[in-house]
Image (cartoon, rainbow, N blue to C red; front, side, top):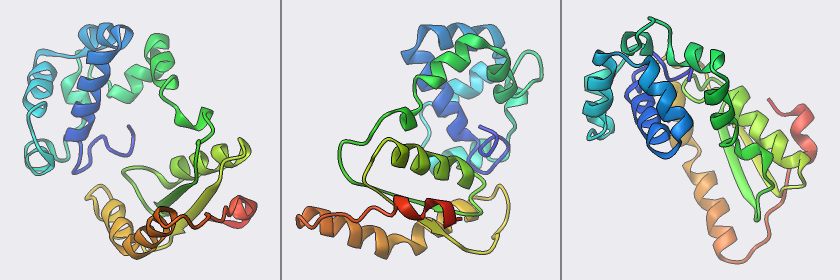
Length: 184
């Protein structure tokens, strides 16, 4: 939430809030207790938006503008045990992948922080997962404007497609969990 809040993709935070509030009664109660009239209007508006619309409509918006207290959504969740518990249930690092996975992350990604993605790879490796981890090292291309999130995705396409093509062809994956201590 810290990465996305106030970024060009801040509208995606509204999508997440909407989805969690719809699927989890504990989170719905937290949303209803903390989201202002302005926030409720933004959540309703964003619910029908595509990525481009969300960038133009809510890019660089901070979630504190949507709350009754002026706190960010992240601050509210940090202080609310029901919300923390509901989100902890979503943490996929607690599971072992049932098949090989490839996880690539930009080291300067400020939307989905690199440390968060790397932590997922480490968690899966510790569970015995067949993980191919790739840290995409590029210079910082501008904070909160999506470039640090999107450019690694684009530059990694060849590797990602090659990895997937090999899996579809029945070739075994080669885990590089052994290299996590020396990976960025």
